[in-house]
Structures are given as C-alpha cells and as structure tokens.
Length: 227
Ligand SMILES: N[C@@H](CCC(=O)N[C@@H](CS)C(=O)NCC(=O)O)C(=O)O
Image (cartoon, rainbow, N blue to C red; front, side, top):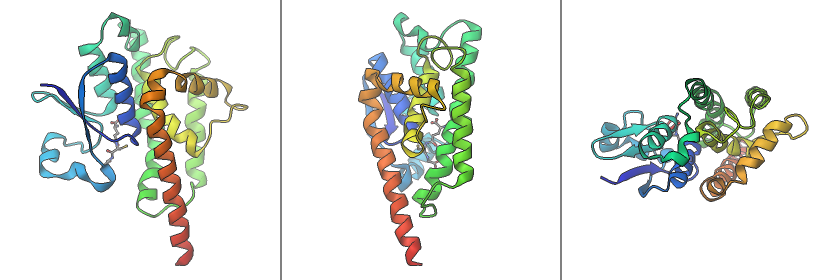
C-alpha cells in the first residue's frame, strides 16, 4: 500500500518528514489533519495512532508516529546509497545523530510546545521570560555542538539537521538566533535554509506557522486588554 502521511504544513515535525520524503523522492499520499481542531481524536484515528500527534504514517500493515522515528524508518527502508549519510551506519556517528534527534524531540521542540499550547488556547499574548531563557539555553546547546562538526552531528547533513531545522526555523521567527552571539548556529540555520529541500518543504510552512502564532498572540493581547 502507498504510504499515507497525515500532516499539516505548519507543524515542524511534519515538515521534517516532508523534507525527508522530498530528498528520498518517495511517492506519498498526503492527508491534511489539523491538531488544533483535534482532528486526530476521531475513534478511527485514535485506534490507528494512540499518540494522537502528527506527523503519522500509515502503510496499511505498518503505522508509525513521531517524526524522528518516521524519518529513521523512511531512510532505512527506502534510502539508496546516496542517502546513507543522512543516518550513518558507523555506530558512534549514528549515536550522535540519535542524540541530536532526542535533543530536538525533548528540548528544542519542547520550547515551541510551551508557546503553542497557551497561544492557541488564548492564554499567552507575549513570550514570557522563563520561556525565552529556555530557548536561549537550547540555542547555546546547538552552538556548542557546532564547535565540533560543521553540521549538528557530522560534517555532512544528517537527519538531526533536518529535524532540528524544522523546529528552529519556527523558533527563529519568534525569537531570532542572534548571529553576533551565536555565529555558528546562525550560519548553520542559514546554510540549512538555503538547501532546496528546505526552501520547498520547510520555508512556506514555517512562515505560515510563525505568522499564525504572532496573529494569535496579537488577538490574545486585544482580548486580554478588554477584560
Ligand atoms: N515528538 C512528536 C511531536 C509531534 C507533535 O506534538 N505534533 C503536534 C503538531 S506540531 C501535534 O500533533 N499536537 C497534538 C497534540 O499534542 O495533541 C514528533 O516529533 O512527531
């Protein structure tokens, strides 16, 4: 069965999967699903995808959620030799890629989650200082890793860069990566955003995501000032 990807363009983890699908040249059916409208909570979807998040892939006899697990699976199953650098076989290199993927999942994307939930629920009109501190700390981690390698886990682009750029391009629109203080991270982000797969599959969704979050914050500001 053809792979079905449940996604929406604004979602950073969905964009990561879309970039990998583009790089691998896979023929995938894409179905739009809006988590803000809780479209993942129908009985049929809950049964298929207990994690109830997007991205989610369905191949009929095989289903998978979590962008990090999905991109690893797609490269392992469908990648050709020319894609092996995305998820290297060398055990230590692979361990570094895995660790940066967990960092994206557990630290980078977490900062966005601290913003998205309250903003969409009408409870946040400005990003509070404690969240700014968390974003700065996460950016410093990237800067430190980029001391050792040109990209986040290796001297070539890996899955870690693809997942992280999807998250950081949204964060950067809300709290920009300062090129004076974080020159390596700024250079990494600009280099990643100049890649064709990023221009085509990440940039439009990231721009929409940031614009929508800012619009919601503006709306929340007006609503709160009337209370
Ligand atoms: N670790 C997951 C995070 C996925 C995630 O939280 N996606 C959001 C959209 S950006 C979502 O589906 N949220 C709905 C929910 O948490 O209920 C991944 O990498 O796929």
